[in-house]
Length: 394
Image 1: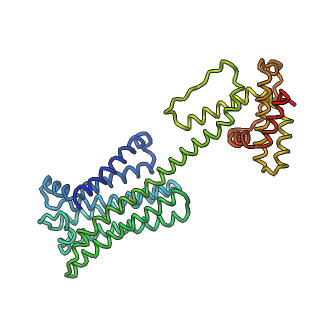
Image 2: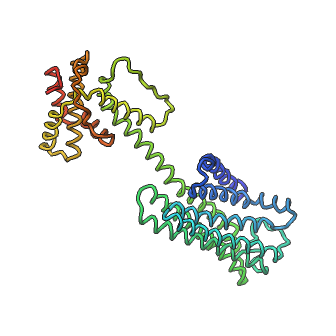
Image 3: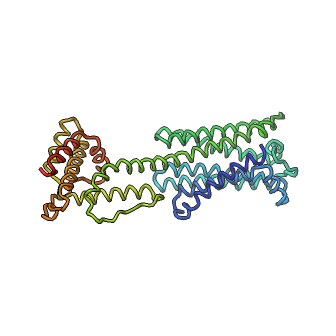
């Protein structure tokens, strides 16, 4: 693998980090968000500093041959801890327990980082090795222990991640489960990376040469594992956001039938609120629901409770459930009130103060009412009868 194979994923992680930083600035107390930012930062750093050109540059800048080795090992160890902490916070639970488990992982892997630095300081690695340090110094005192320690720490983190994500995936559904399964797949690549590295190192311990496993096979496995795992972390967040946005726009569209129906009830001269094209979908839904409730208020004097009760009974007779029948009854009352308001352009009923009151239930029924206005035969019959009689009042 050459430099670009490391720098491209590093840049991708850095871009994702830049996208997340504004959210962290506004909500820095959120442990999940802090965990995501820490993971992206460390992932970008691991790829950037593990690239052979960077390894050589750091060694030259510091004047210490192979100083990049403990640096990369420490970053990789910190990244392993950040993955564990992210999953712990992502899974949730009692805040005190979540914080305690996260602190244990951070403390444990922080201790590993300290030991790695100490072992490198005690050992001797005078010959610079950009790609094969693990196997070249596999039998060097202290450097040998440093290499084994970082591999064991990385392997433990991978095994725990696979176990946690697998167990969690059996308890959830949807995009979250898909993301967790992808993370498990990504960490299977990481376990393969550990296996190839350990095999090459152990081969050196026993007098054999399997260096190609460490220099040629392991790096692509690590890159693939990081890429697949990153997709697993991002997929549930992105897809859930897209799903929520789709549901909001779907609600907005489905409310359109009811919204158009009650527009006639707005008094002449009522200003219309125009939403900018870039307005959020949530604001559009709120505005549409507000317009509908205003329409109900203006149609209140024309609502006929007896007509509503009759429509409710007819809907039940035709096999509708309780909630559906209630929505059909409200829709029939609204349709008849609209016809009555159309037949009373001067608002004589309103001037007479004959206010029957708004009996339509809250916003949770609006979608069912809107659907009934368009699809219910009971509502269509009421609408036709009201139009023929010239009045929606019984």
